[in-house]
Length: 451
Image (cartoon, rainbow, N blue to C red; front, side, top):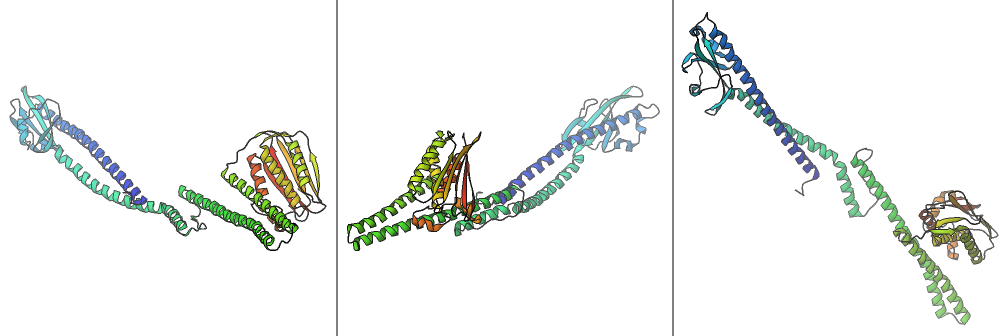
């Protein structure tokens, strides 16, 4: 049974249910019809017997004068007997009637030789005060022949009807389940070819299967996009690591083969250290991103003085960067928020460091902090190289850099802004950017005071 297709299973269950319902309905109908038949036959029987009473009691006629045709009417045989049970007039062509002692004015059901009969008797007084019995008999087996014919015809019609319904049900089910077959075939093809670009593409439809197929296609879109990002991420990470490794290898070879003095060896060692620090920073950020993806970074929300935190970060960044870039601060004092201080520090460091990396000589960075009744607004703007309009949405992607040439000089590796966005989302906040190529960029962070 497990190897039978779903459409065959549905058709079989549908056919069995239809057959059971139809046969049950037929037998109920026949049972009710039999009851109606017996009731109607009993009524006819009693009426036929009662019609004989006036003729027997009429003083103008003798019983012997009653015509024979009067004793058979509407399928009912009647006969007149004296009080000793002797036949006086009429004829009942059933042998058992002589041995029956029926109850007065009561319809009785009798079986004889495999047939069923109804018997009715009425006692009356004829002229001369002589007691007589009027007996009537009707064969319900003869009447039931029609029901048997009806039953046979209906059984034949039921099987024809069920067969037609089964065929129609199979065709309807087969057509209805075509989307399922297409979903299954697409899944198998993807599994075999490992090509996530394939889609079911059922088209428009409002039923559950079209909804399932569309959901499946959306899932494939996301999987393909995720896989492509993972491939790009791996490629970019490999590229970022390859450069410092190549420099380290080259410096080591130079120091071993060509360094003729301690100063030359120190210079090679310093270069190696710079590249090692860069690799360490990259690996740290990659580990952080991996933990972000797994949502395994613990969040420790507490009430923090955002103003003091931002001042400390600004002081640190101004000291680290020796660029000819002026850092201007406009920080409202005593701005408090419920936040994870470690993550907020990393967010602020990435924003300000990004402004330094893409600033211009003798330029200016402005950091401001304000608040309203519900939110904290932190703005970091610069007058650096800016971002082209078509690339603004790409800056949140991992390893994206507006000016890739700056990475080789120890600048950003394109991971900072993706972390900024993730940290803002962790705090139910939002980060946005406005930028113009050659003019500068403005990043606006909005965080709720309460999580």
